[in-house]
Length: 237
Ligand code: PGA
Image 1 (cartoon, rainbow, N blue to C red):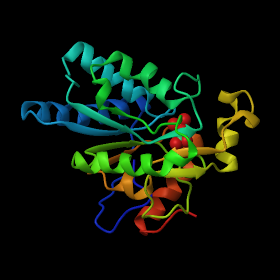
Image 2 (image 1 turned 90 degrees about the horizontal axis):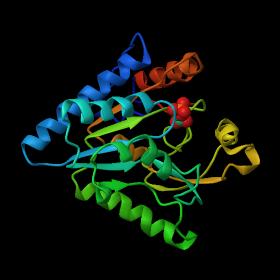
Image 3 (image 1 turned 45 degrees about the vertical axis):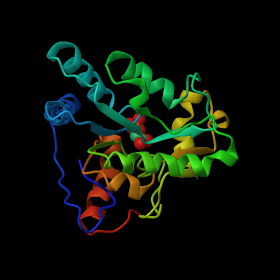
């Protein structure tokens, strides 16, 4: 696990795990420890959350910790990385729906503490809503733990390689490989939206800790490149 776009003050570490389940348990335990400490102090925990196949094991483990080991998530505030645009909440493709089905419906995170970029905005509402998303994160003191996957192109959230290091939550145009990779879920590439709302590289890297998880042979090449770019402090190319 590593961060592909390190800022000068960022310390990165790559850790290999024998299986995805072991890695998921490791990250879940880190979240568990922080949430319990913050709960004991009566303070919120701010989590940045991702969609995709990568974090599914982590969310299963968080549900287990909540149901079997008394992990209370009522003080947790979440910010999701991205959402297709435009996208209704009810759509089978929406990240809003996916997050509720995969995690939120099974734990006690308060609905008012859940934030997901809004795919139902009118185009002229987007800029103000993106600025408001950033403002809310800042008002809470920033993200404590950010969960990240990495796409085959090297994207983090919907920031494709080359996205500015100072980028913020915004509307982006999706890369053709990213759209092709999503095509199966949409029953064909022509149905995949051309745009998405995404947190920016700066919004993501301001988190106190970032866990970038990647599993499977198909991610090996991009993880190698990301780790190398991280070691040299440069962007992916
Ligand atoms: P995946 O997607 O978790 O489904 O591999 C990662 C990504 O595209 O960011």
